[in-house]
Length: 633
Image (tube, rainbow, N blue to C red):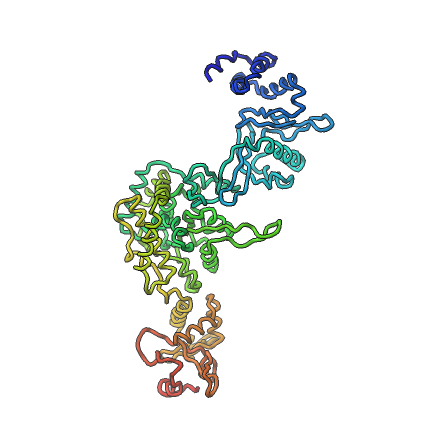
């Protein structure tokens, strides 16, 4: 290259207004490589002397020298500092793009350089996109665009939001140009594999920690996050923070770190996505715990990193989960959601592991997005409510850290994590690809599953076993400190079979609700016009319409609860008819002088007494005669 530089005379601005530089360059036409190299040097020289029209003048000189050849369509792009040089047929590509129409009139296609530079092939769906390079203000930029948007005059105008000078007037011309130049250079354009998500790929690689695969989606936000999954700062500084957390007393902080490593194991263990929710009082470092989990993979900075807020729409959360796919989904500040009924919807939606089925404009269904990961969330309240469905309860590991700080110096930890991140995740997934590691982790997970099994709900056992396995594998591969979580440490945060039952939780809530409103069950008290029932020893009689109202207000199903309560012997029922084996779900009692249908709820405080007698066998008349002599039946 230095020899070529010596060949180029020291031309001035005025020299570029003459034929001398162009004639000198054209002398090398027999050696295309040498002429192309000298062309770049000459262009740079022209810039140095502030002559900005060099490529356009060179194009005019070539037309003057080879008019017939130019008509036959043998021209090439000559944009200033172009990424590649492509055959452009009858188009003139210098400072802008022009073509001569059938009437011999030169028409401007677009006012600035633009060209395809790569074919992008999605490694999951095998669909193709084009990497389009364009120059505005002297700077080249790139955007990845789907072929369907480049093939339609109505859709290509969407490139205007990226700064491309396309509108309804020149859209058809730009479609024709892109199509023609891509067709002429199809084999010449380099091919680049891409993906629209993070995590495991069909070829066994893990994005974005793999070579030859770029983010191929059209979302600038996800592209920014994808680029943030990189190694930054000092691995030693990050390791000091992580090891101090693992050696500390805060089990919730250790669970947060383990949940981050658990994300890529969910699919390998054949499990469904699950939640780990950190909650407690404000100012205890729960957001920093989320940053620690994020720093395993990429930029943990709030706003600049990949942590999101619960404040997004359901569709945005679905798209975010699909993008993360096999890295943890991180959602901060649950309390920004005002409607608590949405909590269950979010849990069920994200734990389903796939997007909703939606119709495509062109007919049929859109491609369903999928994910298999761990959702790590934070808030000042639990995400599972007393009236949450059993499915929401078993899909979530709630970690209440109370008022205990997760970190001794949360501010210093946060600042350190912002500057040092992205090391452990790459190391972890690279090790998972080694022979025998997958079998090892699956055997480890099965052992933890067996150790946790018993009264713990099965889905909780599976989720917890994956957390413990991830922490154990991370210890062996990364930390080497023998500080992985134990079964005893995580077990207090798991729910039992009984606690997972929404009807059991409804029963516990109902007893508490009645205890909080004692005057509503005492006819002697002033009720302000509303009496809910009466209470006799261990039996609470709630007027049926009142019972149904208060349960529905809290989001419970009265019918489902009564069916469960009868099966679990938590209510007394009247005979449906003499000699009938069936029973009503209500009990007839006298309240304020009127016989009223009530729900007779047994206040089961765990003591062994006659109330626990099987209601299918109890002699109600004898029971009431002894315990409630003033009650008719």
